[in-house]
Length: 210
Image 1 (cartoon, helix red, strand yellow):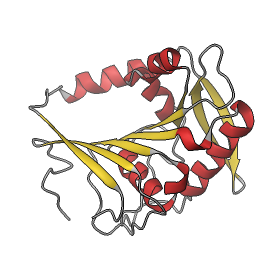
Image 2 (cartoon, rainbow, N blue to C red; image 1 turned 180 degrees about the vertical axis):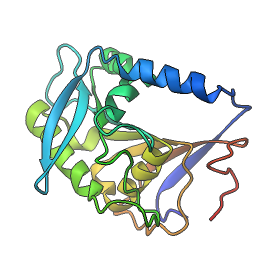
Image 3 (cartoon, rainbow, N blue to C red; image 1 turned 120 degrees about the vertical axis):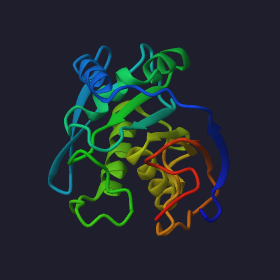
Image 4 (tube, rainbow, N blue to C red; image 1 turned 45 degrees about the horizontal axis):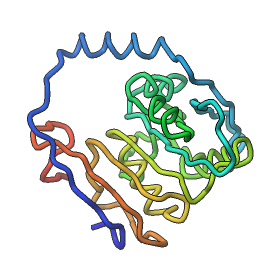
């Protein structure tokens, strides 16, 4: 269970099956295009990190922001950029006058709190702390109006952030990411979570697994 985190579970229907090579080619094509986003450099604990952002025209101080987290296995330098093309959050940012942010993992995947003996010792929680500070300093983002969206490994990372930094986020939508049974989770306040999972997902099982 996720402590005092309130949740709403959404179950998807039959999923479309895209051949691997076709899906890979599509992803590479989307990764090569990044209209409307800019890369921002960031230093965290002495390490070079980065993220991409889509800034709508006329963004004002006190605006909201949504952080869109890519899944695992994406190229370190382009994971966030590809999410801009893979999603519609740039359009939603323009329509709603909010900032769309696409973080980049350090090594192709997030240290999301699950037991992974091959994971590199990267402090991604500190990275997100620094990223939020940067958004406030550069754009005047309202810290009380920051949400998370994540898919797969990015969804697991979003859940870890709610568990450890609930005071920083209003909530999260996680896709293809169930709550890890071994993840310590005592959020500092109630937050909203929507889980979008597929009953036919062969990787992240709907019924859960160890």
